[in-house]
Image (tube, rainbow over all chains, first blue to last red; front, side, top):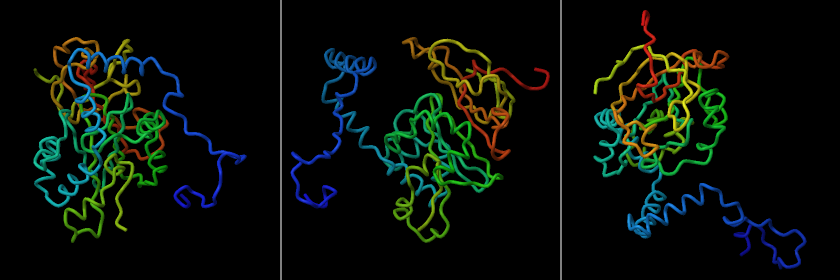
Length: 218
Length: 98
């Protein structure tokens, strides 16, 4: 224990007058209608042999294993190789396959930031997100505040992420309401001319792929 | 199927408020924008949501709106825009004389 526990004194929690607040268990919240329905449907699909419990688990594991690393690799390749970038702007899913990345069956559109246009992604209706290339969305992406404010006052929201752009740059907000997902190709930071693809990949952050930030070299 | 609109066409989103699973957000209804991409045709998700086949397929467009068209009091660059995915059944022509 010690430093790992956040404080290094020996103590007995039993008579400590200020106990840690307990992290609530999942079951401490109410079981909502939709939670019950989700469980019921999953159980029925397994009972009826549509898929097995293990296949269900594997699919969840696969979804959880996705991370922004795949999207970052594609952006680094696009920076390094203009032909690949053209392919990516034409068809992200096919370009991903070229790199042995499975972008899934939903068409993903790449939108490229330029000196004149800064793209940013939102899903005002729910939380559509290019999960196959950048993993599960952060909680803020799903929040009502982000979803409503990003179309209403994008510059104020971007400023809260530390991103301030001059008024003559067009902020272009993409609302993915339908059958498409979006991925931003951020601008390649200055001073990275000599870097190879692997070094470039390490520069690309999740938030830059959503479009709420720029990339800087440090 | 043939797409009714082409890139560059001015369109207006229908001011409708149908019940059920709707994919056109309220903030663009009644507003005019420009088609910037004809994406392709998709089974209609507003039908698929109820277990129906989603036919006929719907053409999906990117429609770009100036922020100042959507929000008269918009604070920010005059060039700022929103681009929304909109199905053809939600669009009317907004060309002069249409």
